[in-house]
Length: 204
Image (cartoon, rainbow, N blue to C red; front, side, top):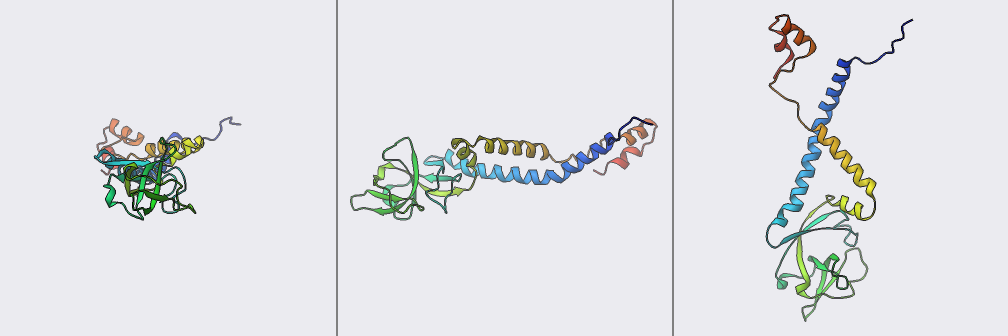
């Protein structure tokens, strides 16, 4: 009785891997292209004078602005700011913390009353016009979620996303065209002097 176990032939395994890669490559390229576009949209304008970005960490502006969204802010003259504008400013009592809220009212003395869309009451402390760091001009969804997860201690989510991106990067390269990769049979044909072996294996 033979003691050999049944194993897929190397050529069959290679063929299966090629089919998996061929099927996954377009999807991986689409995912990477989308993420790259979102990253460019969320960061490139911040290179311009008067622009900055901020990752939304809480749900105080839900549902229009969600945790993990990146908002681009443009520095604007104080007299152009009015009710309804979304603005970025330092927390009145914790200057190292930035808030993104909506202007509810501009008082006659110029002080600005802000409120989160998801909050029932306006913020307790009005801010001065000079405290406004910018007005929201563009929202890029989801791209800042890894920052939110990391700060919340959900490191497993960050690792999962990183793993997914590595797999996508491995699948993304397109198959080469126009070249001729010799298969076992075509190589054998070349060695035997069959000039048609390579032409049959490649359809460039």
